[in-house]
Image (cartoon, rainbow, N blue to C red; front, side, top):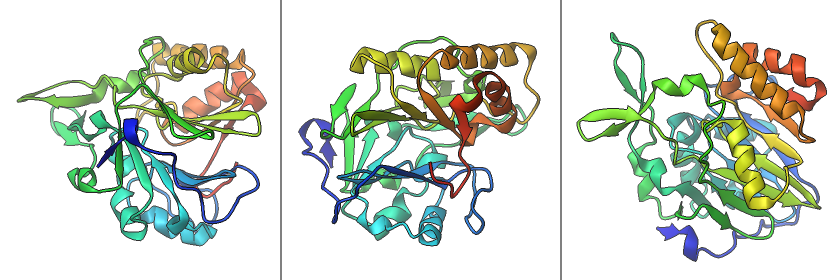
Length: 293
């Protein structure tokens, strides 16, 4: 298996593509009729030089949705895994059977043992990736905080800020010997796609907090992205507390000050999205399964 330090630029797509295209292949909510939905996330992205995936959803259902949408996954040359959770990595093995040549960029720590704590009665539930993923020859491990794949694509991690972290992170753990510790999300990484002078930042769940991710982006790139495509990990099965709602509103107010346009989905949750939408207006959009940005 390769490491990102020694990896050449990703293989160019079989034929040139004229403009960036972003399609939601998997998401929690119904969008285009006929597409399968599920708790997870996957985006298909076309650029002038690449066909790529950001995450692969929880299962092989992305293959079904891609066929429904006329998307040629066999021509994908690059996959970026945002972090080591099954709902973003469950489709890797079915995808690899279809396409054994695409390079799959994942943080080395994404192969860790990750769990969700579901309460005293249910205990700890494994939410990490299938260990068989690490045996794929096409895996490229990311060992650096910034990897420039080529002039269009780069991947970064090393997000150290702690402001406005999602409260829902508190139940997410990592196995440590015979016990469990809070997940620090060092395995979370973001994809940046540049084309025609524009930059789009893709994040899976923004476990490290979207504000901290944007702070890190500014550190590395010296400016703000033109667009962000990301879940915000604000979804809850119960109602948000007053403190959580305040956190959500404060985050929306911070984002509203930027020139960036935001597209969200998956783990943001509809109630949190609606709270943010009231503040951000046309600066924030929800992308459903099968829909194209």
